[in-house]
Length: 367
Ligand SMILES: [Zn+2]
Figure 1 (cartoon, rainbow, N blue to C red):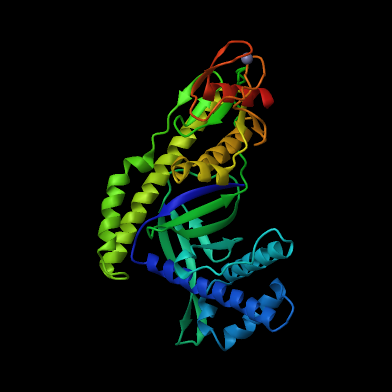
Figure 2: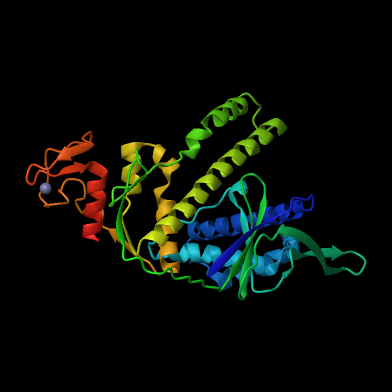
């Protein structure tokens, strides 16, 4: 499946989507608490159907305003809760969390009910109580989104998300699968990740990270300082929070853009790309929070996706494969090598090695 993301234009009526999200959060919170209470009372787990039935009952008396919510969106929220609990029962995840109101960010409209797409317009139908006829009626509200590219094939569902800055995004999920094979080049490469040089290729090439976080550190420091001087929860404080979120979003966008361009370049040049299996926890322990500025995890995810798309071979070498110490020419390990040695000469065959290039070559060989 392929997802296309568009920005919804900011207008005062976006508040209605916000209210919808807040109401959906209420549903989310209510059902999680209900399941926990049932557990405390010694009752068995209520599955999706039981939750649905319970919803119909409480919609009439306790929460009449939930009748205004799009029913498909509620259903998909209940399915999400059910899926989280099923994962938990299979011991694949921890106890499902109740999200905080501001952390609840997305609603999904499955199928084709409750929304319509027309050119660059999204028409959502909200339900509205009509006191004249004493009936629920549909209130269709159009939203414009920035359609910078078209989407292909059939739409499976749409999702609306609110990010930390307060911008709304439309996600169009289609069943299109694009493959665009690149012509073979006959070249293979091993890639080593590092703190000083971002990537070292087995052909000796070194790629530096632009360190986007570092570039914006001054702005961030000023904003954080100004935030700490404001009264928590005040209007000025919230404005500052959003300003900060905007800077962080910008940094993340810059980094992602750079990752995509870098991966595209690598995929064009090489048939087989080998990387090390990442041990992100260990890296954080060793290198501190700088790792999050480098975000190797995201890089590997993009590389995986692009390799499938362009018919390139992607290999991952297990994290226990020795890559640093063995000499890439004769294979004999250099036990005297310490972390600070950037260059070394193999005691067996006498070849001169750069630490990172040697590791990249070992990764390629192991792959
Ligand atoms: Zn050697």
